[in-house]
Length: 436
Image: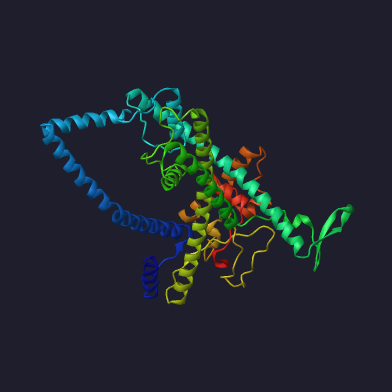
């Protein structure tokens, strides 16, 4: 379906309907928005087909039971419905038919605040007082922000460890391919290839592929989910598939609340150990899935870039002058091509964010006496803001920000990024989809 939309767009382009160039970032944003809408429509169709028959059966069964109960006990239908509404109100406050542990003792409240700051939000326990709801607003604001920071720091460390391990494996693979230790400068061993000695520092800028990291995180998430599901099946009495479903819903912070762990009053003498294991599994699972989501988002971005390149190629074959503009920036330790170079020369794909003054890529230069345009003004401020964010990020992490006029900043623009994606971009190498 989406390919059909792209085909229609290309045909419209060839017919002369497209009359202006589209920025790559805007094109990626619009394409992602369209894909998300299509994804939601497909998901709604699938779930509606799967769950609607079950809903109808449950509704018919409830109507039959309700009528049978009212006739059996000679009850007024209206009075019974009012009584059921009273129970729904009590249910919101934590009153259940089953015998469960208290909701608002210290352990129950601790479990509740854990679901709040982790953004799981089961809905099993919710504040019923006005003061509790007001306090939750301010408490969740700081708590969720702090937890997201914790997830980012966890992501930075786990990616650093994975990068170190994968780099060691890469060096081992190079040795097996014919790299032999050799005594070089000052007696230090240098690897030697068929083309001559190669300095070990040549791998200093090496970054692992995002696909390898995604595979490792997928395996780790599966192992944690399987182990946690085995524990929940034994302790909660759930089926194993139901436990896997609970793990994904919880670890991804969706938190429907239809299944909640650690709610019974007692667990056969190992209550403390089980609640501790439940806490550790929730912590490790949420951190692992959070990291995995960020890696998958990078892969999705690469897929969007691949689709944009394909669309650009198809559009260029037609008669329409419109093209999706791509911002080209100089790479580290590389020389920019001259004006005679091919404009569509392939550049090295990296994970770093492009930040180039778009006024420098326009077809012509402004005359010296011409007033600056709004586009050039916004483009210049975009680069300045990116450099300022990079300096603030480096100052917060290292305490020594790079000077704004350094060669590194002039080349990389805003390479550090902010948040989880910035961490991923600095730690991983973005692998092109074309190589798959």
